[in-house]
Image (cartoon, rainbow, N blue to C red; front, side, top):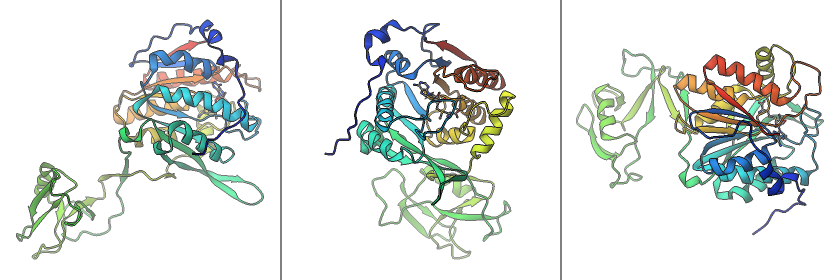
Length: 384
Ligand SMILES: C[S@@+](CC[C@H](N)C(=O)[O-])C[C@H]1O[C@@H](n2cnc3c(N)ncnc32)[C@H](O)[C@@H]1O
């Protein structure tokens, strides 16, 4: 086995006696029905949260400093060993907080992608790697030789055997035919069964259906008997042209239907960085206070595709401007969910003079605006 090693850079909060001396103000008493914003360095905060939150977090989304060397409002310039040490400490704690059915998404660009992948393979186990969800974020980042169009989001399960399948709801608006003159309009057909050879006769969905001309099909269906009966009664199963009706039964999918598909790992459907910046500027009433916030839709899309229960507990411990809070509020509004969030952001000073002294102040201001807009109260907790 290959072990990935680096020179460890110790941190002051490696010392448990120092962490013991710190206290949340007001004290953190976990309720699954509350949203929390914690202003603190995430390393001691995660340590302090561990006893109450162990295996309780369904989904973690983080967008850590990418280590690009850029001069952002926050530190984005580490030596590689230092960056790996920094990430390792926090990811190890994140792993203990994840529920057995949970997963983590980690945003990253190419500067550290490959190092992060190996670090995470070692920490979470290669077998728990789900995928890299790549986001096409606008015109791309160019150098002399190429233009990089994607940013990355590595996804790991706490235990992939217990992670529910991901799914995406896709609008089906590409049908141009109506082979049986269905009054509901154009449709296309999709597979709804396994071939006889691939069917499992012991499966609960193995049964026989009959076409209008009496042709029998015995195989494993992708629907239960009850669901199949409902589809047949609603003329949603196509058996090929009349009067023979002897084609392999397929499901009719109309243009206004939506379909559950396995999510693509390339995400094109969300706003660009520029739009996300404009959205934040408008929300805060000031331009350019925080660089490169993520689009709200990117984070809500990632949460949505996990198909986790709608009361999932979502954590972001590199909160930045607080996009994850808005994403959860927006998704709850869309699907009637009751997801809750825990965000952590340290009070990193903002260099430009303006309405907020620190990133955590800016984040809290945004959370308050979103909390009012979506009626999702949030409690602020600080730890010096
Ligand atoms: C790339 S930004 C996150 C942007 C965020 N996703 C958004 O959409 O606004 C990374 C954030 O992590 C914060 N951060 C860095 N180190 C931290 C630490 N040790 N504890 C808490 N926050 C930290 C930085 O201040 C910065 O705001």
